[in-house]
Every structure is written in structure tokens, then in C-alpha cells.
Amino acid sequence: MSDIKKIKDEFLEKLNEDLNIESVNEIKSELFGKNGKISTSFKNLGSLPAEERKKFASDLNFVKDELQEKINKKIREIEIKEINSKLENEKIDVTLPERNIVQGKIHPVSQVIDELSSIFSEIGFSVEEGPDVENEHYNFTALNTPDNHPARDMHDTFYLDDKKELLLRTHTSPVQVRTMLKGKPPFKIIAPGRTYRSDSDQTHAPMFHQVEGLHIDKNINMGHLKGCLDYFIKSFFEVDKIKMRFRPSHFPFTEPSAEVDIGYELKDSKIVIGEGDKWLEILGCGMVHPNVLKNVKINPDKYQGYAFGIGIDRLAMLKYGINDLRAFFETDYRWLNHFGFDPLDVPSNYRGLSR
Image (cartoon, rainbow, N blue to C red):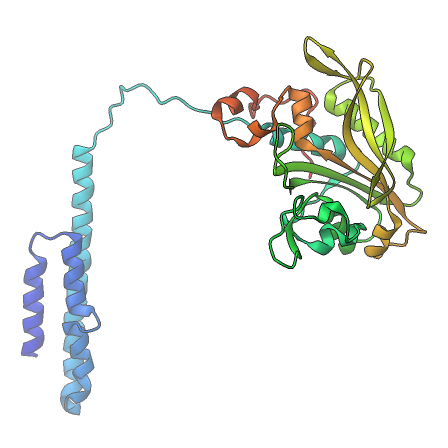
């Protein structure tokens, strides 16, 4: 018992000194650490005679509790002292002018994605998403892309492994495949998102944004596709009339396939959509190829539908007068402050996002 009392008196005296948190923690470690004095005393209980063991353990627990309470009290005292010191020395000058509030801007791409989602939701489309890192099957094979197709070449596609099985998706069409595999027709979806191709100039970027559309049901035809695109273009560009033409084209995943042009004219060096005798290519589309439907376990004799793909960045450039795609990704605050959108300034054709 004399050893225990000696430990108690020694450390109570230490804890009465003017200490900081680090010093108190050192004392705590000396007492209760793995090889601390109190911890060691408990370990030695087994070496005592049975008749002494019970009383020694009781006395040791009493001293342990007393020292622990003293340590906790000391820590509270130090914390209160530090708070009071800060209150005395760190004063706030309430006469200073308030800080300027800097409100961020919505990026044109984010704005256009919300506008697209809103417009297509009004005619029954829902929004689907998928991974940016895709496998070769979903990105090419399931979409009826032949092994020798140029899009598979290294100069177009960012492959992530030597076997060319993993890649950065080159379009958002894989989302259509994933959606059809996990459900049953009918399907009516759009899939906006980032896509990647090895290309970079004033109108192309290695990373850009696309929105794919898909409508699969019974008795769907090209007339439904034209009506859908006519509604979208009028709503997005806020025009009452639109000149639109379909030019024959080829995509592995649609048959027949078409490029869509819209009429425009130049006024004061600005593009005016819907007027004039000039033509501007805006998107690609077509009827979903029967092989694609077979690849996702859908009977092409019973179901058919259309698909389209639109460049979101290109739409933003056309609608908001931006002439260089590279500026979208340069993170220049001055550019964003000019072309960005106030979160509270909702465009007239914005209906509210529905996802």
C-alpha cells in the first residue's frame, strides 16, 4: 500500500503544477500506458498472496479513479483557460464593412443539359446514366459495330488496356444498351453525359458532351422521329418555325440512318436559327438496327424504334454565341462570368428539371 500512496502523492503533486495539454497527456501515459505505473501494479496482482490481493486491488482501484478524475479536471481547466485567452486576445471589429458575396455561375454545358432534360421530359422521356469507363462490348459490339470499323482504331478511341477491352466511352449509346438489357420495352429515354475521342481543335475536344435519345415500342417509325426532333429544336432554340431536312447517312447501330440539318441565316455575323437558305448539320439519327435489338434480347419483329445523338457542347455554342469549344474546359473565370448563368436567372424556355 505504501507504494500505491507514493505513486498517488507524486502524481497529484505533478498535476497541481501549471501544465499544458501535452504535459497532462504525458502524465496520463506514465500512469495508465502499457507500461505505466498503475497498469504495472495491476499486472503484479497475481504475484501477491491471496489474502492480500483483494485489499490491494481495492486500494489500487481507488487510487486509479482518484488520479483519473484529477487528470480529467486538469484537462477541463486547461481548455477553459485557452478559451478565455482567445476571447481576451481575438476580438472582432464589428465596424468593419461586410465581405463581398461572390455568387457562382452555372456552366453553359450544365445549363444546356438541364434544358434538354426539361424539354424531353415534357414528351415522356426519362433520363438514364451510365459509366464513363466502358467495356468494348457495350461501346461497340452490342451496337453492331464491326471489328474493322474505323471508330475502334487507337487514333479515335482511348483504350485503357493492351487487349482493347476497356476504354473511355466514345458516345453515350452504351447507356441505351444497358437500359434495354435491364428492362423490358417500351423504352423512352435520353442519356446525357461525357464522352471521349482522340481529337482536339476549335470545334472538337478530347472530352465532350453528348445526349443520346432512344424510343422503342410497337409501330414506331421515322415520322415519330421527325416529330420528336421538330418539337425539340423549336423548344430549344425558341423559334416558331424550323426548316429541317434529313440527309441519308450511315451508322452501324441504325438503319436507315440520317444526318439532320436545320435552316439558318447570318444577321450581323450571328447565326439565326430557323430562317434563311443556309443549312447547318446538328445531329445524327435513324431507326434502331435489328441487330442491336437482337443483342439486347428484344424481338425486332415485334418492336422497333428510333435513336438520335446530339452534341451538347455544339448546341451551347449555337444558342449562346460561343465560337471556340476549347474555352469550355479552360476554367477561365472571366469566360464563365461572361457566358455562365445566374442560378436565379431562369431562361424563358426552362420548364424545370424532371429526372
